[in-house]
Length: 409
Image 1 (cartoon, helix red, strand yellow):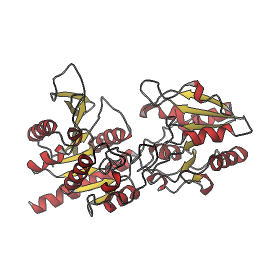
Image 2 (tube, rainbow, N blue to C red):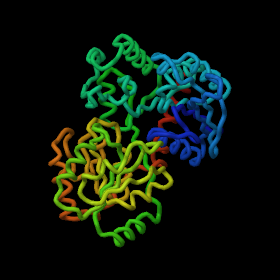
Image 3 (spheres, helix red, strand yellow):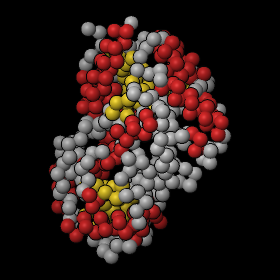
Image 4 (cartoon, one colour):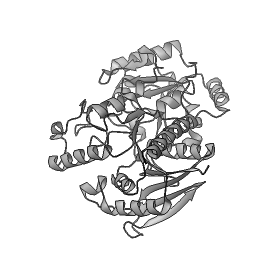
């Protein structure tokens, strides 16, 4: 039997990668190819001033070819979610490549034209929702005051105080909702994301939970972890977000400022591309010994996780998944986290380490103090879905959609 040909659309894709959803798209694509029976091609975007607007360039990493559409820097509000020029390029690619199925993975900036072009060529679409771009023009349901919106369900009439042009936002909301009815299936990384989206009128009855995978620890990870703990017996805390309110840094800063002990370490990861997130001044007031850890990628993440015993995940908004939490749990690392939407669905965090959003800093300080007093570093490894598992689950969804499509033909 010929290999199933999947065209995956993601705003970024290797060799030009950025963001957690891109990691998932790339890893699942590679796992499908490795599994056998599937061929994957990618389409993504670039923004280069040295190339003509909307020209298509071809790149390749490993066995996956990536077609990049060059978008101009300045585009209209509507072009961000429904760009006729991008749609035309997508239609040309679909016609030339003749995929069996399109995986519209993370398509902000690409826009809904991928669905339009697929429909014109009678190619079924699986749409994956990773954040709230389909419900909120601000993508993460974070208001202008940097606080979580909290709507459930989302009703566009309640967004008037948050958007620049309500009627443009309403047109966008209605368009995206209508386009969701044209896909064969919608996947969500958590039950929370699925429930909120469908309650808001998005793709009602078309959704399934397709949990994100992670890169499992390498074979030598636990040896590295044990060697570091022997070398330095202090508990080490790690934080992978930026110094922003919505990620909970003010709570972390206050909790560690108020601690009466210094016998521990802390690492904050410089996740920006231009080293703009962290400076030493952010850490001077904190008890303990704190350092800035350089940005890391999938291939060297074990080096960071081997250095920490406790992951701090204090998000102040309802997220759809929580990749870092699963990475830590798979490596036997204690997690202190907020009750932030889909991030809690693993069910592996101790009750005393699960902190309500907007709780005062003393609640976090108490959890930190317990860890320091009881030294709960040696927690069991929690079984977490890996990328191969995720690809296997996606293959089953692809086969079901194609089977249904062929029956209906």
